[in-house]
Image (cartoon, rainbow, N blue to C red; front, side, top):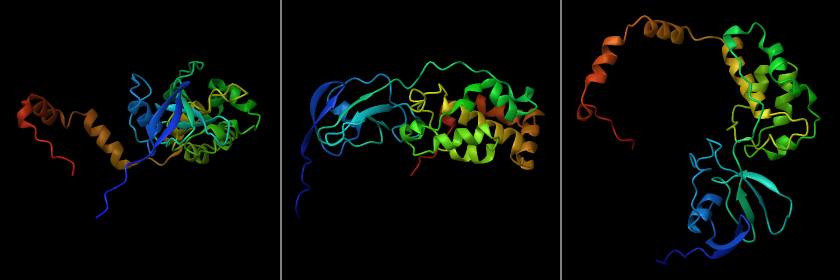
Length: 225
């Protein structure tokens, strides 16, 4: 039986310095292989948490693109670097219980949303393939149901924020829609409401106190197979 061939080395440029790494690695794996210490920008490694936004270009295409570093494989001649996953957006604080019309309150908290220029830069920047521009316009026109569905796979990486020429934070607009849709417009589950009421009424207090009083070795957790 033939032995599996070792992957060949390729040349990549990480934050301006060239390294030799095996092909087939993701950007994050290439950084670890090169001995770079990563204290920020690493999270779930599954493309869900949005902690590792990166910019890159390839040897064949000098246009700078955006991606999640844990999900993007390196290739020979690629240059890339992690970027800050937080952008200094205007801090918005809102309380949904105090809102009467969240579709109008959107403009109170995010008035810049109506200034979208339809440039589509946010959609191009999104590593999850979300039609961000359409999602923002769904918010502007009050279509929270479809807008919330468009932003359902948003991981809040914020790569859409610095490319917006209207200074919109599209991911924050999407999060507002998702929250408002669930609170105000989705059909409520009576079973969930009943269970919440039971918890508030203290139905499970005795069981909870008993669980907290158990020693650690008395709590058995089944391993995940």
